[in-house]
Length: 339
Image (tube, rainbow, N blue to C red; front, side):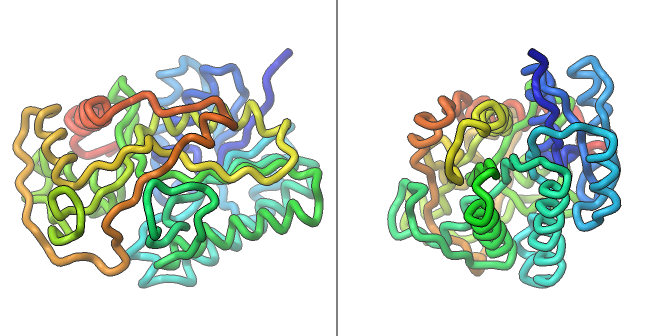
């Protein structure tokens, strides 16, 4: 039996491109939809080389009903994996309306167009930021949610909207995947994380410092109640993360409620532990300076990933060594990203 056709919004981006590779390798048909505002067509060219086939790509914006209708007119979509969204915490604080328009309004329009065209299956890319500052760790899916910035709030709002959609119409199949901190890249080194401007996330910043693009890494705060005073996070290899989406696509049709699932390793590493591991993997020094804490940052955040194992038969397999080695392979082969 031929596998389903999956629409991947934001499929040219970091997590999207890695997921497209694994979906195709698993036998799915894939349609990539992206406005290329924070992604590059080059990533899809490289995906084509990795999977040895042409990628169906439609350039468009999730806020445009016309753009989305073109997709549904030309393809029989079975499920949507929804990555498209703005994701810089700092920018969201400066430009909240941009985030609510793109992320929240965009998802509302996407769901409207899905329902209009008889597609009611969506896997949504959410985030561990929805837990705010958790009282304890590891974090379970049942923990209370709150957000400390507009980016996190936009993710939380979308989760609530999708739950309301399900209450109104139980025909919908909905999975909310809450990611912890995606890092690493495909082991080929040909696709990876290519942030616009100064990276918001730790790993690309470390990698760019190691490759000489940045003078030093700023470590925000060394006075947290952690092993070495620096913030502790649950880093997950992007290929493990992509694999969880493939597993979710395979199971989404069987679910009879909205599924909320943490995707993490269940282990936390401090900023300085990550720096050391990266130095070991790359053989390069990563100079750093301690800077004041950032507003909204929390001391410790890592997942209890046992529910993902139970529901998706998925668990992270790649450790900190692979995360650092694969990041370095990407960064050293592509010092300027896709440019």
